[in-house]
View (cartoon, rainbow, N blue to C red):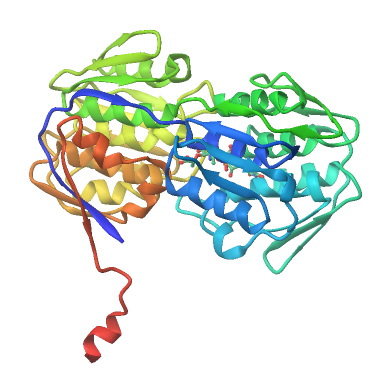
Amino acid sequence: MAKLVIQGGNRLQGEVRISGAKNSALPIIVAAALAVEGECVLDNIPKNNDVGTICLILRSLGVDVWFDEDDKLHVVGATLREHQAPYDLVRKMRASFYTAGLLLARLGRAEVPLPGGCAIGSRPVDFHIRGFSQMGADIAIEHGFMKAKCRKLTGTNYYINRSSVGTTMNMMMAASLAEGTTILENCAKEPEVVDLAIFLNGMGAQIRGAGTDVIRVDGVEKLHGIEYSIIPDRIEAGTFMFAAAITGGDVLIKDIVIEHLRSPISKIEEAGVTVEKGATEIRVIAPEKLQSIDVETAPYPGFPTDLQQPLVACMSVADGTSVIRENIFDRFRYVDELRRMGADIKVERETAIIRGVPQLTGAPVEVTDLRAGAALVIAALKAAGTTEVYGVDDIDRGYERFEDKLRGLGASVQRVETHEGIDAFAQIRS
Ligand code: EPZ
């Protein structure tokens, strides 16, 4: 286990390169195993722990997965043979449930543990299960597993109850190799959904409409390997944009797709930050003091729920009161930690009311989930004195070399190993 020790007060300056999108990499790595011919060679894959976990899960299913010396990820799906996803790996990451679509499409059988709850509230997979059932799978839920089997998935018309990135992606993967046509309605429109559709079509799938409410998939016999480079991570880019904003910084954020960030850019400009836009980069020039703003999270192209926490951290020292409404998940647990740094935030059901304070102060704080960790680091960059951010493992799940990139912008941040997890009782007996 480790913590980040941060001295607040440094203005972030310089340039930072954004890595590939975690939420594209995870479904695309799983989808790559749908190929029965050739291999997929994936570029711009972020080297974070969630990517590591999904690769280990694929290996446990018999798939050959490895990074080469040029940091490209190779996936050979032909050797897929196991239909049971291992609980000890799946429990770490909800996105493991994408293997259900892969296993049903390739093997006609899947035994995948249901994802547990996590720090951002209950996250069921009932929409996924209903979709598989409508495609002809016989499904039993027992002992915490979804057990499904089918001779062959068949096309269906499926209206997804609410915008769901995971469900849209799992259905696209399963439908790609189903018999006949699948029409998915009320689909998520996130850029990562479009990235997956483009990748699958490159493998020989027939998918139309990704990025709109209705996606049509004409099933094909088989898919083949391709080379592909995934899109940049809009959430990482937004995280660095808010880190620059809170410190009154001047940062060039490179290798991004600007239209994926329209909402966060518009909101941070409303808070008084200048954002100069290039072709694939933005220059973020922040004032000494941010202005308060009101935001509510929404499915893409609305303001992303994954940037709600970093934004709240930014607004905790803005001039005035901000109201931020979270419509996707229950993800305000980290506010207790911001309060320990002196933030004045009241949470009423799905709304946070943030009264800007003149100054945050450093404190030892605990990461409750990936994006909460980013929020606490952002607050620490501005707080007076030293902040120790415990539970960095959660940050490592979704950010590649986070503290290195921050140090490259002038932040004072060190990673320090802690001795958590050592049996406390054993210590008092010695
Ligand atoms: C994806 O999660 C992302 N994860 C999340 O990013 C992101 O916050 C979320 O989409 C945004 O919608 C990955 O891509 C790996 P959903 P996902 O299905 O697919 C409800 C991060 O930090 N729902 O779009 O799990 C659900 O509870 C992570 O990178 C059901 O009720 O989210 C939520 O309220 C956090 N039943 C809403 O839909 C279902 O079967 C949207 O969830 C599925 C979802």
